[in-house]
Length: 395
Image 1: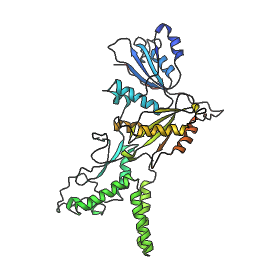
Image 2 (image 1 turned 90 degrees about the vertical axis):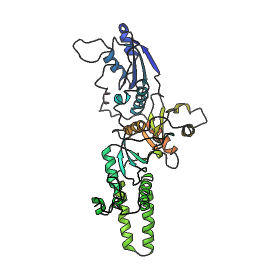
Image 3 (image 1 turned 120 degrees about the vertical axis):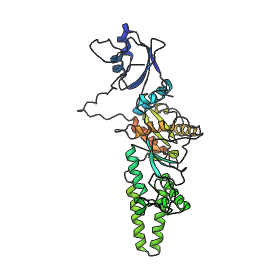
Image 4 (image 1 turned 180 degrees about the horizontal axis):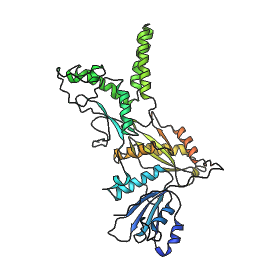
């Protein structure tokens, strides 16, 4: 857990010294009350000194702005060097101290994913924000693919993908009634039509399995199948069939065009998010295993000058050790943290996904980029730090 590592007592008569002791940097902060029965006040800010000057400064009788000067006893804080570190730290402390309202405090809403509900006799693919888990913490009840930036983007991707398969899109209860007229997709031959017995249960299961394999492999399974068919048709001089299969491959490319790198089978969402840390020449490493954010580690590159072990070896050792640890944390909430950062614009830091292995060399080059001094224009001043608005009084 990203603990508070600094603290100060607040004494109103000596507030000038108190404010000078605060760093003017992004941070999360917990304001402890003087009364034991009162609830502490948790904030996150882009400028800790300025924010507390506003909250703990002298009361202005003409202003309606929240003032905690008479409320505050002690201030605990942690300087955060990136938006992702701040979000994660704020989430951890909010969930620990305010278990009943931390979701509202963070405006937390699970991200959209695609689900193939395998518990249904005739599964379909649809967007959802609910991911139930079993006793081991793994997603249960079906195959899940995501997360997406929004429900709209998830639905749009599902529509493109389902055009490649004949899996049902209707929400009716399947009765296999021959008298049932069927839907427009069955009339267009875009569905196997299990509703009126247009296919056997085994045939429908095969089609659903093709869809699941497509999502789990990022389209590679269907592409490999079509490419083999096209090559076979070309060898048999069946150029008409080869051309038809080539159009199907183009349709796969069209369905996947513009798809971000993050969405994938949730159990296969293994990544490393690299951020610059507040300490000098230090990188914050946030591993993600099966969609959950593991305990971060901090790699100081200044210490490797006199040590035989390289930073790559240290990073490799830490990731291997953490991968063997059991998964903890709420899956939907952790996916929200990752998706919120990944789809932010602009996005700070870099992310690397584990495919057959971790791309350590690329990760080391990314660390060098993150630690390089920022380039500032001589004519353009840096943008002023923004701060949180709409302070709410403590409960």
